[in-house]
Length: 468
Image (cartoon, rainbow, N blue to C red; front, side, top):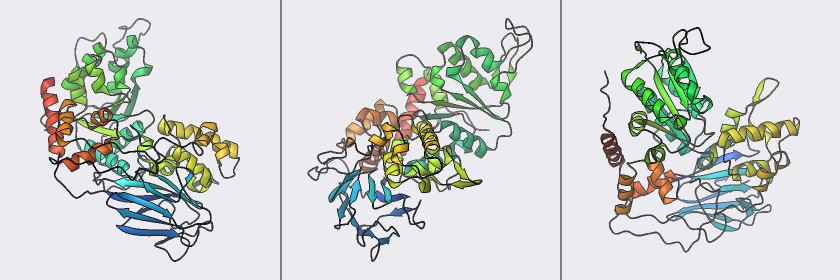
């Protein structure tokens, strides 16, 4: 469930209590991503809020921005035990949260703030990300979600196991696959096969190849995608679209590291790493009998979760630079300098159901309409522009955070869904990051999640291969 770009949560919402849950100090850190500002020093920076009060403004404050539209002492942010509070200090141009002018509010994770011409995104960092690698062209971003994704990709690349990329459409699964291949230093090529785009009756020859005259109308032999990727990586997009009979043949290839071309009488050994991607929950397909449990168990040993854009709004402009680069006289121009503050707000407040694919289309069109000038709200299209004036769910007083479940109920959910945090989050109707916070509070660590996954794998009748 994506986060809303919200701002205000009710002050009457008590902290849930559970005598069985150990009282542990939270690792939560609050960070401000500076997406848009006239001050070149701060643009693109991430500022960590310290306990107590931080004042933002133009002069004589904790953080000074060279933004003429800011008041000297514009607004205060206070980190307290119950979250982050914002107070406007009587500023001339006002303080806006989720597009609404605000005097005093408690801020939530993902809140979009605007002070003068400076636009920021507040992030609650749960301390789950262990990645220390710097952003790359394929994997930009400084949010916790981006760092967690890079960590999972690094772990996957360091192993010789096959990989499952799980995430919504348009979240950059192909970029992640390329990065895994690059980091793994495999010498062969990257070959891509979109399962959904290949007719089922042709898929076997497409994947495994055929000998001469084995397929009507085709006289010459064909290697097939698997052998084309020899010593390299084969990316299978939309793996959930593969039919059950072909799933069985793919599983045989994964287990025996060999293919049998159509019409051949002998197997051909192959050395290929498979990376499968899916925008649907494969476990649900298993439960419906539409996907093989043993194939899923084989693929998801090394899983990379691709976060939706709604979970990493602080990375939006860095991602825009990656998926829709613009240049002036051959020099890259960052989108942060090409967008008006209103346009940045609108982009941050829009839902982006198709994620980066939709961002690319929107900004490509907007840049063409602007004809070299700064891109304003009027260039973004009516749906995106409407986000600036529409009060998003969760943006008003009276919104409540999801009630934390008891430790026993959380453990039951982990067992029920076999340690799959994404599925647990979907069942509770929250974002997976919230589940990680609940797990930390309840004292449920990664070993319990791995144990639940291991039980699921044992039920499927297989175990991890021994690395040689």
